[in-house]
Length: 115
Length: 113
Image 1 (cartoon, rainbow over the protein chains, first blue to last red):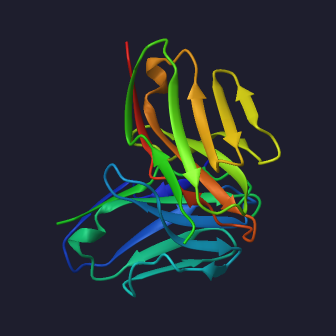
Image 2 (tube, chains in turn yellow, blue):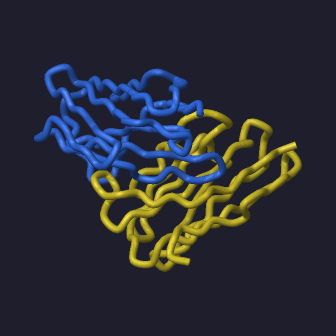
């Protein structure tokens, strides 16, 4: 498909385990964002990539969270030693231009449940 | 700290009515104001956007009104339909950033048949 693809769509894990969430952006989109959305809540910015660089990672909640992007394409968000408060939907978005004034295309998200 | 305040948090409108969602910002240095629509289980999708050099933009039943002096912008949905039931987010892009979007908290809209 031509849209942003995220996997897994659902992940249930036990507290203390590590999880990896994957985002495959639209081909040619240089800007990539990760957001977190708790149930019924708004969009919490986590990190922004331009190409493979992350000029803004100010939204990462703690050092348990990390992200990388390779080949200017696929990105992985890793959460180490998961906690129950990490339960949320993690959304990835990409943009052809730097996303401030360009349209963001969102994936359907990865729903993470930490037991 | 730059903020975008969105209201109401939730809204119920009868089918055929007008839905109005308001956003206000506290920093004049924004240059792009998009609205995103999110259906349950999906990611947000761009609905309509406006730049501050125009006061109104209309696309079908959806209209953005922008009041620069009041630092407010609003989304109007005319002839609201049950299929419009979704969560709506306003956002604003700071002039001094080429990637940031400051998001409102969202409005859950329910259109009653």
